[in-house]
Amino acid sequence: MKTVIIIGSGIASLTAAHKLADHFNVIIFTKSSYKESNSAFAQGGIAAALDKMDHPIHHFQDTLSTGKGANDVRMVKLITEKAGNLIHELEEIGVQFDTQNGYYALGREGAHQKNRIVHVKDQTGKAIIETLWARICTLEREWTAYAVVLATGGVGQLYTLNSNARTATGEGMYLAYQAGAVLKDLEYIQFHPTILKGKHSILISEAVRGEGGYLINGKQERLMSRYPKGDLEGRDLVSAVLHEAIVQGEDIYLDVRHLHYFSTRFPFLYQACLQKGIDPARTPIPVEPGAHFICGGVEVDQVGRTAVGHLYAIGEVACSGVHGANRLASNSLLEAIYFATACADLHSIRI
Ligand code: SIN
Image (cartoon, rainbow, N blue to C red; front, side, top):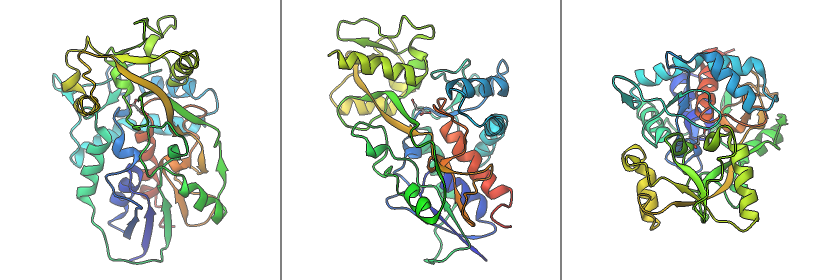
């Protein structure tokens, strides 16, 4: 059996490993643990047009309008059309998404026209990682390979304030560049508006605003009320508004005191806040914007091939063109799973 080395251990990596394992020896290199990655920390969920009032075309339109015209339209079409099937494949291997009245409990996030975020409470990434991990096993130690798949994630740790895992330090891009691959759109760094204040790298999911949480200043004034989509404007605009307020000397808070079900819908965040001495039922949560996601990366085609033979890149390390200049919320796990599946399913590695 030929060997494929996958570098990185987030959702893109484990999805590719799961898909390739019947045909290859698969070795995963991780500099930390499969429990520590941006995927494992992903709270929001996966965007997919599953509601009967929704359609992949709306997801396609929202992705393009958020991406400011810099998206690769063909790639956006591919992943938005396949999103529903990918959700069903995850269910087939045991991921249990939240439901309400027998159907998906679809959440809402910024810049989406519809409720379309499939989630597992506020730890969607962790639930998917654990399910995938349980289905693959580590093989014997080997160091040469027929193909190498980079799935090393992003670069958030280059920024003092960020939402990323400690492992998101960008080496994958550097390795690919050294090998002769092309890096693209590195300037498109997305900032998330609501990171728990104080260099904790704890993201307060946009899904919290999707459920009715809102941003206020220290005088209890709402900060996003003058914008058409309010607190659910795209995260680029929300981050810019908060940044401007902070520069003017204001403190910013996410107010969820009125969300009586906060502790059950967002159990991880509720506990994280309590551990930092903040009771969200009584006190608005102090937040600030921070680096969250890089839309650029190693240039790839529709199955994750780079410019270097036998070198592939999938997930955040790659630039597939799906996100353009600004990623639509909950399109990152979708992109990771889509390209990991395409890379393995289309026999691209077997050619
Ligand atoms: C969030 O939960 O707010 C982040 C989701 C994402 O980055 O897509």
